[in-house]
Image (cartoon, rainbow, N blue to C red):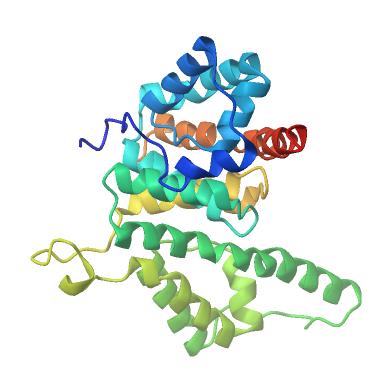
Length: 288
């Protein structure tokens, strides 16, 4: 199956029997057509979608129109779209298990390897560092206000900090002034974070890849940065400082504005979780 061609029977295996627990109703011809359109566009059918199309096919149709824009244009290959959606749903600020399952399945169907899926999850796991990115500037601000901070900060880093900064740039491919404060306050933590966050950027050994004759660094740098853009722009996070950094990095690595825009469009679809989760609950209660 081509990476750009959706599976026409794109129903997660676990979804086949789940609907019976809720006494699944027969779909009308209109509802069957909407389901077919959703699946043909690469969607993974589930009991949540079935509940929604049964309860309000008009709303489902409006959502399909919104969803179809990025999936029809495909500025990003289908596999990358699924990996972006996986990162959005697996992020620690979202953790929406039904969509983690759906987009893991969708990514595999679109040709992603287990290694690539693990890499996306590992890239998304760095989101926890934003506790430090937000906290450190405020800590230093309060220390200054309370006159507890050093009156003068050295203009140059000591030798260890210089080495740690160089190591970060070498492994992560960029530097931002926000890291200076972290490096100043706790070089040990900064060193450990550099090692942790750069793991997905490592040079793969042949045994870690499907093609054992080629050395690589996993997903290309542009895609890594698009994943970072996705988790930072997610409605559940909206981390503006990091998003700007990674938009700039993505452009540097060759992403076009239309590809970055498509990431935002995919992220905007997260709002449907309110309706899919609620519709399934409503459908189940309506049958009791």
